[in-house]
Image (cartoon, rainbow, N blue to C red):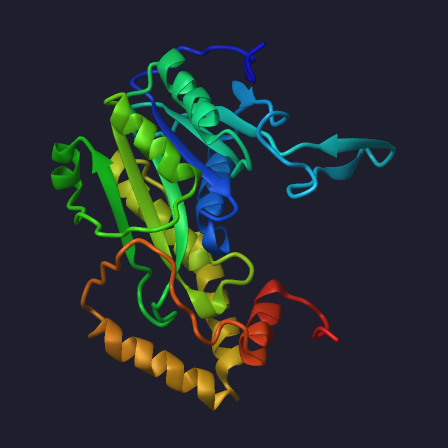
Amino acid sequence: MSALRFHYRPELHEPVLLIAFKGWNDAAESASGAIRYLRQQARTERLAEIDPDGFFVFTEERPHVRMRDGQTREIRWPLTDFTPARFQTADRDFILGLGTEPNLRWKEFSAHVAEVASEMGVVEIVTIGGLLADTPHTRPVPLSGGAHPASRMLELGFATSSYQGPTGIVGAIGELCRQRDMAHVSLWASVPHYVSGGQNPRATQALLGKLSEIYGLGLDLADLDRRARRYEAQVAEALEDNSEMQEYVRKLEAAAGPADEPVRPALGEASGPLRSSDALEEIDRILRGDEESPA
């Protein structure tokens, strides 16, 4: 029995599959936040899902018990599901995929994602991610990406990445697309590694802005802009009395160049030498909204 289950198959016009995964590929929940935002705008229902049973080690990615209707307890498993979406100004339909990076059998899992695309006539698969980088929070969020075929790279203005190192499930899906000659775009937001705790609305806003530009979604991101300003104020407050971190941010600003100069970092993880300091843990605590410092 296949792990992929369809609930229904709506008629869609040249759909694009936009998909993100919580976990390693999702620094500061920037990518998963983008898909959740789009789902809120589209208000659609699930068309398919991938059963998690063969792809997760549940002692590592534990399911959650929730109360339904205040009376019944139910277990929420780490599903990957897909919902159709339409946006008023776009000339095509979309499928929004959201899940958690699986622990096991990535090739088989990726094949199920490709099967959704094939069954629904998807013309392009777009994987969205967030990565930790040596970028200052005071500058616009750097975006980078890749695409297959090469002509799509040129069309989108992406630079070829020289990154070599660990990858995640989005990398596995991208590799499968190249092997099967399926159109694929990857889009990444770089998140300051020293403020990676909690959701970064600026990174989510940057991803959504680029998607809206590429696919004509016509998104009004004013609400995210307000959240981003509050986020920036929180970061400024967290750094206010910490001269060490302020100096570190100034060094990142100098390395990034002038504020109006576009930055295109290589894909990969930042070294983050200060990541374990008490100052950074305190910043994470403030951004998460914890009421008390850790003991």
